[in-house]
Length: 307
Image (cartoon, rainbow, N blue to C red; front, top):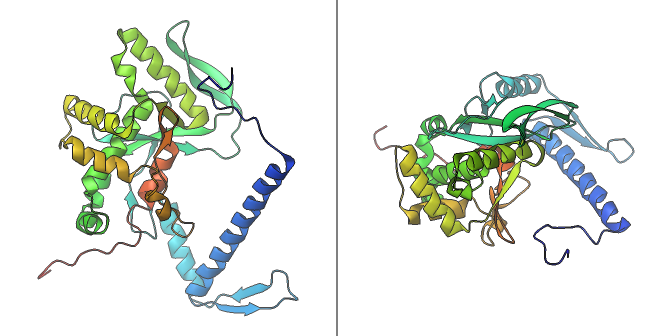
């Protein structure tokens, strides 16, 4: 029965696998610690290596370095959005307490909640067809922000982005909108025969996103491009892309064999938003913000002639 169902079931897990998980976690900590030391050394701190000391690598901040760190940390902790070392600006996000229909210039995303507390959360009641209150520890918060604002703030990177990647920045942002849209409305929901069925399917998915942060759709990339262009026309997007252009953007945000080489610990990216699954695509809404965060890694602004 397990073999012929669509559910993925863990059937082979050993103690050695658990040890491997802890080992990888330990390596991640070591990588983080080494990166933290590189940050200090890169800003001119004096470093000393001594095997008899714990930790073996010691460093001493000069008078200017703590000031540099303070400026950097202050920028990241300010109330509106975040500036990153990769030059990406993301506008202030808004946490949603209830479901709202996505406008053409907005996207939804999921954000992991570390060590969540047990509390009330909105949950769809399929019996009463209304939003009620559940009690539990949800793993994700759902937020939204204006993709149009993101495009406006980063439009000066459009040309170097196209030169480096061979795809328009706007096409990639359109693909992100499509992923967010279908991650909320689960693909074929709009094709259900009655409004009640469509609402029930959408709201049930909304409740599930609070726990898993992703959706599964039965689309392949070509289907997704076609559906995205159609819905963009119905919702009145400012710019409508051809299916080919939309397909290029979708490929850029997908986990493909070619894109695997771009995933790196140093940059924190490129994290895919779309992951092929057995019966379609997994839309990882928790990957949207990290993806945008690293979108302009290793790019330089093209100087304007006479500017």
